[in-house]
Length: 140
Image (tube, rainbow, N blue to C red):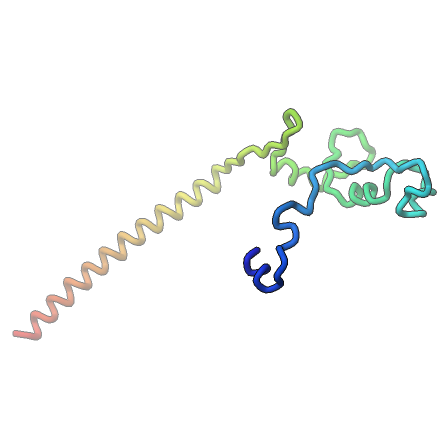
């Protein structure tokens, strides 16, 4: 980790004390001044949205089921429903997902392994007793 990096380079590991990802928001509104535009082509398009935000939105998963669009994009509806993200007072909360089928399968596997272990122990005991009887017969 950090200590190994320091020993090998003599420098501290970059971003080991602070995150390289900021939690602040970035504005998607294009600045009015053409000199402030990073992409010259973006300044001349008809919208007022930064090209980076347009591209992010185009690639993002969407669930536009109830928006009234003629052709709604519903490709990510199952994923969004599956992770159960809910906003309350600006907080993002993930609800615990309970899947009874998965719990039943895990429980069944656990019980099966327990029974298998008991059966193996029973067979080992029978083999050990059989070896004792064979040795007793040979010595007579």
